[in-house]
Amino acid sequence: MKQFLTAIVILFALSAQAQRKYPNLQGIGFRVGAPTAITYKKYVSKWNALEFTVGTVPRGWNRTYYQNQFNSWTKYDNYIYLSHQVESVVYFQGRYLMHFNVPLEGMMGRLNWYWGLGGMVKIAKVQYKYADPETTPSTRETSVTDIDIGPEGIIGAEFTFEDIPMALFAETSLMIELADRPGAARMFGGMGVRYNFH
Image (cartoon, rainbow, N blue to C red; front, side, top):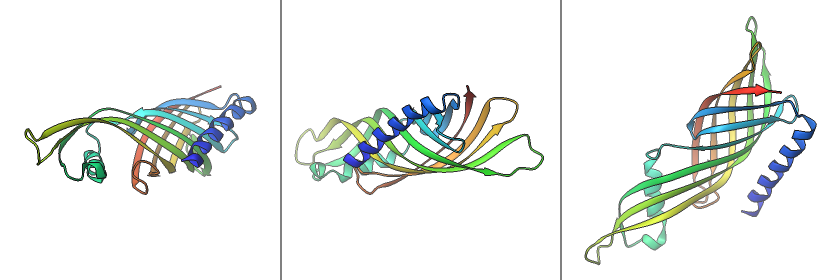
């Protein structure tokens, strides 16, 4: 956990340094997928960039994850899962991305593929309903704040138009949880558009 938090602090420090060294190379955009998010990208060199996102997912997305989460908690070993309701969920991502040119013939624009490493934090508020077979009435409810933290590996592609300051991108990523289900692997993906400005 300490190493992960240290990495996040380093990413923000690099972003601040990049603002001074490359003040004109940046973009802001919107992506749909998991998560659907606002994305800000800051180039620290011609081929390397930092990206930060804030987003969410539909409340019904990946419902089995929360059921498995309930079943993994030892304090609920004697209870029976009935249902759950996700009341809110927010994702935060910080990434360092390395870009590589894909040569194009006869096309106006620039195509890059990229990969990178980063970190993800998810904070969700979940209302669980479960049964205690030893009491009457047996149905109980509890509200849980579910916080997942872990490193993320990313791979994607980005097309930048030549005559307009816009870029299209698509990507997929894999997160390995450090908390609160250590070792659990989760796939994410999305596509979006970004406005580049000076």
